[in-house]
Structures are given as structure tokens and as C-alpha cells.
Length: 250
Image (cartoon, rainbow, N blue to C red; front, side):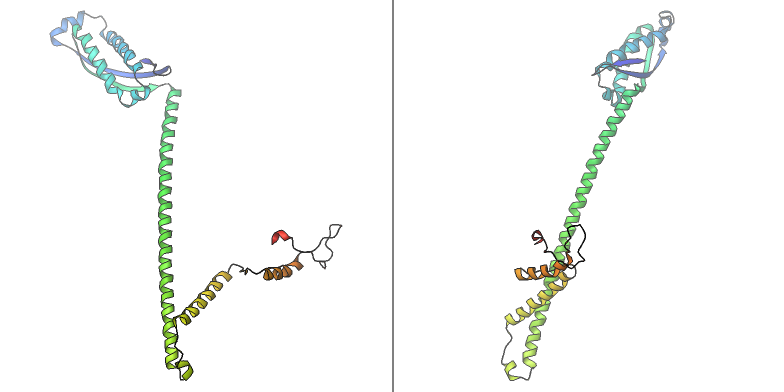
């Protein structure tokens, strides 16, 4: 049977129902002689009930939880109607609900969009957790690296201190023996060692320029020969002439 759904916009929904009924033994006479065609009477009554119930429901509710509600409503009303004619309604089943094809397509798209939205939320949560864990791991690496550097420098300072003590105590020179190594001497050696380590690490992939204008001027003079002055006809003059490097480079 085809039922028109009027919740927000006219939508046709095709419902397939099955009615299980039997004749009451005590009312066999009424069942045989009261109605000429009981099946048509049952169909007409079911159609009337469904048309009065379904339009009051939302379309989504019809699919999700209203099959049992529709079945109970039809069974209760049909039992009261057919009982006087000698029939018992055993069960009412709503077997299938099929909307129009365009409505079905729209519902599928809506469900797909909802699932896609949920997937994006879960994906974003996963990326968030990954970034948080990466940040925590990076922080742990930096912490352990700092601990390692701290221990390394502590051991180096202890070694330098012991070396200075052994040097002054084992040397035969009286002037050296009388000169005690102070903590400042150890610190100076340590700072110098760190300075050389820094130069070694920076020099592998960087050019270190001191903050001295004279050095910049000297570097400019070294680079100037690589800038050839173009002649008026658009050709280079053999590379003999030199033009100053533009000031904006400095």
C-alpha cells in the first residue's frame, strides 16, 4: 500500500504489511455470512489506519523505531473491528518500508555526510594525539639530551680539575709546584674547550661572521670581483671591470 507522508514535505512511502488472522470457532457463522470478502475489508481498514498514523511521524522515526508502533496500532484497531465478525487478529507485521528513490538517495547522502563528519572528528582526534605524543617525545629527547650534556660537562670539568692538580703536584719545577691551580683556571680551559666545540659544529654548515664592520667590508671586497659590470650594449666587457655590490645586500 502506498501512503503519503506529510511531515515537512509530501513524501510517498510504500509500506508492505502482513496480517495473520483466523476464524473464531464460536463465531463461525458470523465469519462465513457477515462479510462477503473479509480480505478486502481487512485491507481497507489497515489502509485507513496506516494513512492516519504514518503522516504524524517523522520519516526517520518511521524507519528507526515505528514498525512496532504501527503494528500495535493496526493490530489493536483491527482486532476491535473484526472481532464482531468472528475473526481474531493474531499478528500484524510491517515487513518493508520503501520511500521514493530520490528520498532514499537523499537519506543515503545525509547518512554518508554524518559518517564522514564523524570520521573527520576521529581523524582529527588521532592527529591531535599523534602531535601531542610527538611533542612529548621531543621534549623527553631534549631533556635527556640536556642531562647528557650536563653529565658530560661535569665529567670534563672534573677531569680538567684532576689534570691540573696532578700536573702541579708531579712537576719537578719548583715555580710550578708553588703555583696552585685555581677553579678559575679550570673554568677558563673548559670555556675554551666549549668554544672550539661550538666552532666545529657551526663550521660544518654555516658561515660565522663576527659583529665587526671591518670584516664585512673585507668580505665585500672579496666578493666584488664576481660581479661583472655590463656594457652599454648589453654585453659584458670581458670581466675586467668591477662594480660594487649593491648596498641592500649588506
